[in-house]
Length: 117
Image (cartoon, rainbow, N blue to C red; front, side, top):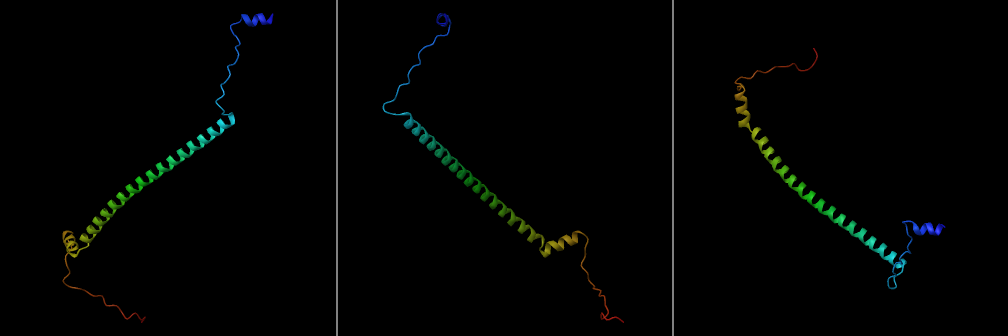
């Protein structure tokens, strides 16, 4: 009775198809080949990552060198500006513009000899 029920249902059991065996290649050899290919792929990925990192580092170095040269030029401009503002003629013009006049007479303060009396 149960065989008749199985044959009348929608589910049918078919024999499983056999996987063809490749000419002389066993599963162990195929597994080794896959492991080797996986390792080669991993090594290639690591190599490309390293090359990419090197390229990025070279780009960063180039950018920093450009920034360094710009900062050097800015520093030279600031040093020239400081030298111009420290010149005696500039100091004299600044003093006159702010109402300072040169002293014509000097007054001296005479102190004692420093010995207690």
